[in-house]
Length: 67
Image (cartoon, rainbow, N blue to C red; front, side):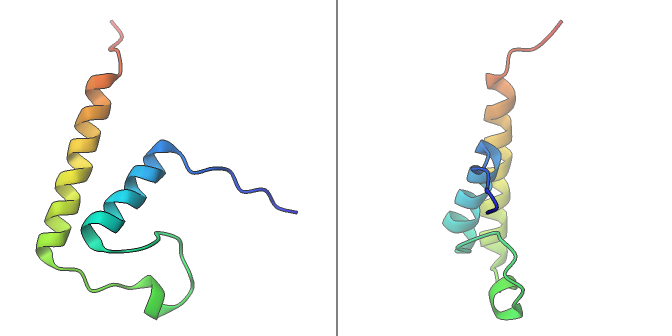
């Protein structure tokens, strides 16, 4: 039996951005063109990139910096 590890926080954020902004239900490869390739609007891509940038900015400011 193969155990699957739970998704990391980063993976969860990426999944949420894909769903919320690009309307893509999963980022898992499903080996089907119909399921793995999506038509996405440029405004959806822009929105997803902005959300990813903001998530990275928040993550960077929440980590204590080392001197």
